[in-house]
Length: 272
Image (cartoon, rainbow, N blue to C red; front, side, top):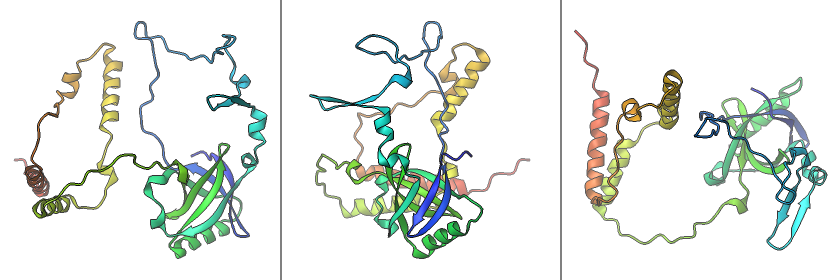
């Protein structure tokens, strides 16, 4: 792992030197664009619409346009903003974790103790654990001021990014009222019960990425177009036009789930 940031967590007058690491990674297969006629790779150019010249990235500034006026912001002006220089994760408050709306959760990072002594790191970790709360923090990463929370995962302090309050949109539509019968509610509860178990993330796989990897391997081996139906089998098309009775759908779902779970519990037959 490579640290992407280093600084300190400020907790009152206590400073905790840390290094920051991305806690997640993408497993998506990396692809690039090519011309369908000859396979040539597609390259993009930054071209000025005024002089029609290709512009180097070092000569590109940013601008804001409100529809009537435009303001160009230079690199020097951006770098002179006070937040850019901050190397501090500042603890602002401790709050109950259930007050953090899951919809505002963003990217996660691991914090590693930096420096010769990890005592301050251990103190902060113990404080978070004993308080049974999360620490709301502000920090600057990649020239942007950000909001986050500190929490404990195993023995590591994790920094979880949060979206700002004004970034969360409200639903701009109405949900129509609909009466749910007692029988439908009971059947739905039975369905929930039949699916109730401990979460095991390892059970779930990204089927699309697995199929894409299979497709790539087949193409690399054959060098020709392949028959996707022969490789992956035919896909079932959903009958979107059919209307299914809610109670019938619930009953069939419960029966199917019970049958699946019962089949999973049956011991495998021994081969002769």
